[in-house]
Length: 68
Image 1 (tube, rainbow, N blue to C red):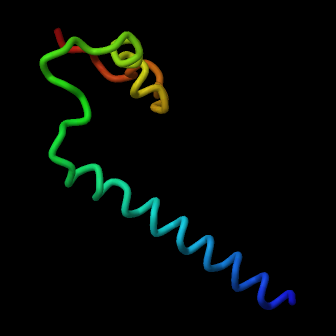
Image 2: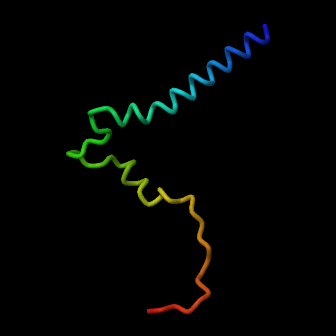
Image 3: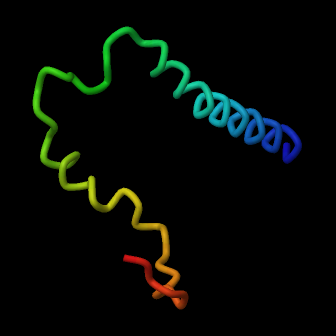
């Protein structure tokens, strides 16, 4: 019983991973664009713009000479 259950879980995980890896290819192959270029961007998309790169960290001020 435990072996059969492990095989079912493993098969489910493989199927889930395969679907997740295939999704970008499916979206790229669709003929319809994801965002309609004729319409303005929704507020969520314009609000997210400045926060796209929030994962980067500031290394601090430059210690070398500043050229102007």
